[in-house]
Each structure stands twice: as C-alpha cells, then as structure tokens.
Length: 335
Image 1 (cartoon, rainbow, N blue to C red):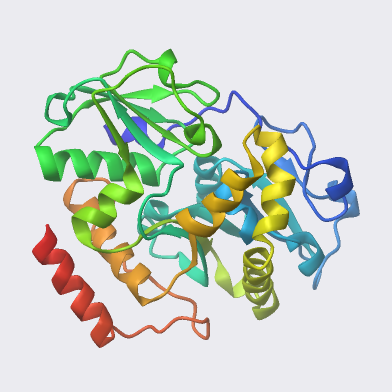
Image 2 (cartoon, rainbow, N blue to C red):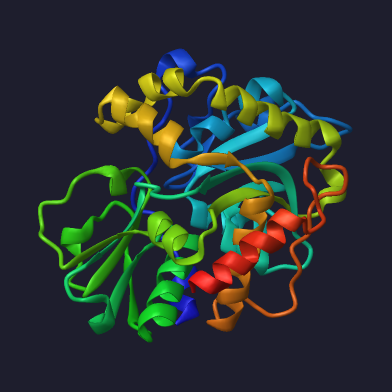
C-alpha cells in the first residue's frame, strides 16, 4: 500500500511566473517535468563556496511563502516543483531545504523543521478534496493525486479511523482530474482541486474541514524542513520567515497576479489565501501536527520512533503549553 503512496511521476509542469516577475521568481529550465528553477548553474552565487538549494511548491497555496524569496536570498538556488517531488529531492540530498508535505517530516530522524512558516488550515481548505461515488463506508478503491503525500495519508487515516475502511490504492497521474479515474473515491489537491467538477458525487470532503470538525485542531499540510541543517545558516531561516511575512502582507497582489494563470476570479483567489489558509505554525498547529503523526504511525503510514525536531533558536515555543494540553484534551473528546 505505501509503495503506491510514495511513488510519483510528473506529467504536467506547474504554471510559471509571468515575464514581469522574471527577476524575482523562478523560471523553467526544461530539466525535468514539473521543475522550475531560478538560475542556470553557472550563474549561481555562492556562500563560502556552496549554494544552498531550496525547493518550494508551485501551487497557489504556497505563493505567500515564496514571495520575493529569490530577492531575499540571492545566494540560494530556489526551485519550484510538486510536493511529492520535493520530498523525494530532500530525501535524496538533491536539495538542502524543502517545503515538503508534513507527513514526510515524520520519516527521517535527521530532519528539522526550520521555520514557523507553513501551509495550514483551521477549517475548510478548499484545495484538498476527496470525491466519492459511494458512501465512505463502502469505498473499496481510492485514487490518490500523485502530487500528494500528506493529503493521501490524511484521506486514508480518515477513512480507516472513522469508517474502518482500507481501500485498494490507485494513482491519479498529475494533470488528470476526477473524470479520468473509475475508482470509488479520488483525492485531488492543489489548484485543480479548486475548480468545479461536472460529475455528481455521493460524498465530497474538504479534508481540512473534515479534520477540524473531527479533531478540533488545525491541520498542517506543508512546512520548511532541512536535511543536513548545519549547512543551513540563520540567514536562510530568516529569509524564509521574511518571505512569509511579506507574502501575508501581499495577499491582494498575489491573488491578482496568480488568478489569471489559474483562470479563477481574483476575489476567489484572495478569499482562498485570506480565509482558507493559515501560514504560521503556532502551538495549536503543532498539536495538530503531533496528532497527525500519531495517527499516521498507527495506520502504518509513517515509521515509529521519529521525533519532530524544531531548529534551535527558531520562532517556536518548543514546550507543550497549557493551551496545547487543553486542545489535545478537547481533540480526544471529539474523536
């Protein structure tokens, strides 16, 4: 089952920034489907003889986390790709820092969470959907978006914990939509999940909303994680945080810039960024993250014995506060 979950093949490249953003936004090099990078290798600036390689996600939900990132970190090689590809690249050492699916941070004891910048939701997320042609309790086949890792794991957890269902898994290739799969249920993430579908379904879950109603906690979809963090200096971490802060202050600008590319109304894009998403990994988000890890381990979707590690000196409160304990107690009672 897990082999299907972690295997991805790209068939569609993400949308690339417009020409007017070329100086501060990554661009396509044609080196791999789905990969967009900032500089040709010969032009890369270096710090102490080494370039820090940063991989970020190409979806609208991550744009506030990479706003002017190449300007803020001119010595870094910044690339955009699908979440599942970034997870593989970080694991293989092809990048040093990645905005990776949260479930992937549970898989390696050498990983550290570098910043409190993240992609999270405290309710409906709008861009992570499960469409089911049957009642959830009767789902026998589940197609998983190949760009997804966290959402794929979340859907499996929700189905097993709430309905005792462990469906056979199928891939939904990048670039394909729900109509391209005959599975009982389909998980779709990212920008294409925001578009309406023509088919009528028995059940449609917004997975962020389902998690919040079930647990009473926020859900964290992606965060900045580093491997070999001794090579990631404080300036890099500071740049990630400053980029998020700048992006949060520019929701209207980002929505206007991206909505044309995605063929959605500016108002819908701005509402999505402002109301559906949250970009700070606070104590409540940490509690949701720990619960997700616990459930992923219980369901065989993450290994045992891997502790979440936060970079020393980052912006986290690393102790479990009274608020955390209260939230966890409430979540247990809701389950």
